[in-house]
Length: 454
Image 1 (cartoon, rainbow, N blue to C red):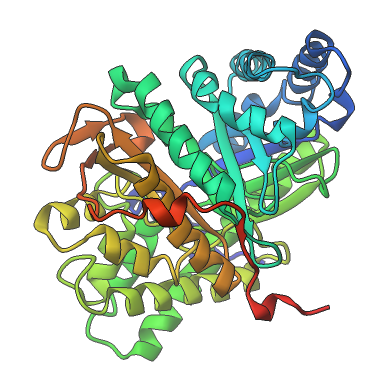
Image 2: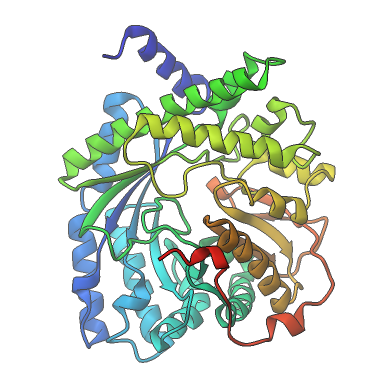
């Protein structure tokens, strides 16, 4: 039973500490939309999404009103589109036609973003996979709500270096096509190693082929809640610190579980998972970097940052799994630069570099996320950064990702403005030494020895 003290405590979290449900994401399978004609495929896609998701936004608003819990985003994820278009798409233009259909459907139902313009190519690419990847710049520059992701590697298969090289070029081309808006197209494009099938967060969400026809996944947040709780135990031991984070994560996850169950019942769609990631926003007091400072660092990036982040991530997971039997997605702490004012402050102070962020990704949920780099960065350099991050995920059997934004026409010392939840970002310097000969090798990096467990 929930007592009045817990009710008041949750109200304080919402009103004073920036607790929210970051997203309700409806996963929809489009496998039954495949046909040999791209126009018929598009018609089926539009009809299914608008039917399945017609009540998603209103249900989210009803739940928010009933329980007083802010639900920031309502989103959709779909089956990786490279699979859906394999039978009907004969060119990149055909895939762009599907992207525009997805955008139109998303607009019709009133959601914030739709994810799943995706390809899974960790071991190799089909012709459809490659066509979709090559269509990404045009697709993201001509749509507003569509997000794209590509899985380039996994612990079981290794890293597809041909796809890594290609994605460096695609990211640059996407940046060029959206250069008039600080290359914002790249903010809707992420590459993965070990991408999860049930992630509700953008830009990496897609509806995995092992999922049901439709599913509800919920992403909760609450960096402000964790920071506020830690303010009360300043100077205490690591044991007290860990217990405080764990108990707070438990409470935050219970809120997500409540919303997920209600949404599932009201929509008549099975409940999938709660993703208990600490996802920051540009709002003051809603920062993962501020949590690291509260743990005892002058700035994120100072010596001890990786250890503090590892502690935070582990305790968030321990608290979350006690609150819900179905925790999934990414689950942990996000460290995007543009979406976290504390991270931006650390970059501007000179405390946080690209190399330190890479080290931090060894122990957190995602990877190099929402990082603006000079627009003249070479495609091969971007591919090299991607390869480094994919290797961390592959060897450590965890999800890692890269969302780099080469801001065309801007350099170190300037900033890129994205607006909304995406915030703004200082342009960070990139190591200028060449990795061309490495990136231009063909083939794939083999899976590590510990992947062989059959």
